Image: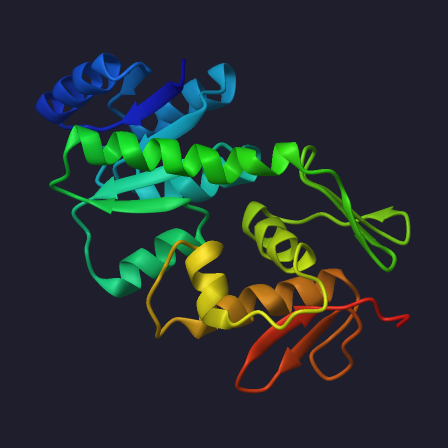
Length: 227
């Protein structure tokens, strides 16, 4: 049974959604405030979080950033904020999916199952090594020449996506769709910023690349620098 932490301040929505998800086989722990949710999620470790951004005590985006500092639990943001800039900010802050209100319980149930498939699929795959770089999806651990590299959740997902296709150029559109679940253009900067952070942590730069090679107008690929 999937344990869902539902963070929603509207009592009617919270009650009806908790009941509907329960009928679909989930155990729902419903919370009305952001700080209460943070404590609940850290202490009880649900399988997935459904997060409304309009909370009474703290903005949901700030809560998401706080949560990402202490947990890698999958987060589906469910909100009425529908402008593209807000969606990009939310995905960049660490959300795994974004669903707009109003939505049905069936749609949310499908999103929960899809997010869990994406985030848990790596557990079935062993570590991947590219040159001196090793990624272990089960522990989400990355080492470079035997030294641990500390990555955020999204940085790991980006590097993992590239590592599984090492030697192949991956387009930014593909990265936006598969890593950020954002299947539309106009947000290449999201990828560029995360690639810049990754390069810094891998001890390289765009002007002096080692593992991350950009192909102008096409995308980026992860390579073994010794080859």
